[in-house]
Image (tube, rainbow, N blue to C red):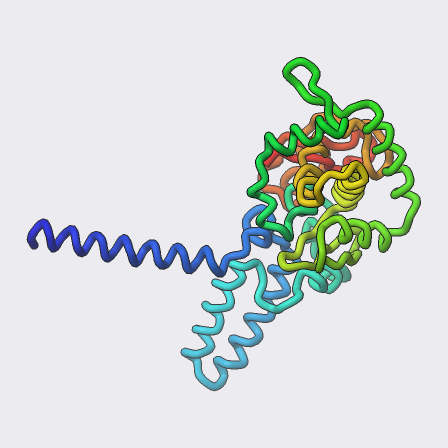
Amino acid sequence: MSDRRREAVTDRRGAVGDAVRNALDAVSRPEYTGENRCLPCTAVNAVGVAAVAILIGHHRRAFGGLAALAGAAAIWLRGYVVPGTPRFAPRFVAPLPVDFGAAHRTEADSGSLAADHEEDGDIDPEAVMERLVAVDALVVNGETLRLAEPFRTALDDRLGEMRAVDETEVAERAAAVAGAGVAGEVHDGRVLLDGRRDAWLSRPVALAETAFAELLREREVDEAVAREAARPLRAFLETCPVCDGPVRETTLRNCCGGPGGVSGDPERSVRACADCDAVVFTER
């Protein structure tokens, strides 16, 4: 084979490989796979796919096998096959005598207010920081940043008020700051932001990010900047959004059970409440 022909074959193989990767990226849903995978959702969909494959296989064995492979691939790439699974799967499996680790979910798989807005990722982090300093939310302390004391006081007051309201109101307020077209629902103590890209927020994350975003918008910060800033601002929390206990540096093993939970990285550093173990911030 000539060098030119060999190069042409290599180019074609590279083009095919790129096309396959692009196709996989187009159908994948990273917010529901990898470390974000919901085990109840996966289990419910696996059972559903198996049932459909068995029914089809009774008539055409080959088609049953294809259905099983297609369903497994969809679950692997997208997290689930049945539409709306994240809304009902956790409640569906709750009565079962099987531990899916739901009680040990951490911030790493709980989403954020900005999850429905991919375009927010184009916001310059330095511009966000400058805006937060300009509205007296953050102050520069040497080479570090900290919450401005008046802002921290306002935050403590807002969180105290939010702890007193019911979960439905928290979900509605989280949806309001998450953007137009987003609805908030409560399922098993977590908030589901139902938009273009569904996001699950743990209670500490929902409380903290909603409080931050509300306070920033009241200071006339653009809503996209407020959403984007809400997550990193959680790193500055000194008291727990849920119980007002002290927040400390720790690991998932010490606050969430390590391998007993859904995390496969028990030594991962987090900021969590020393009293109730609520995880308030995890480094990505």
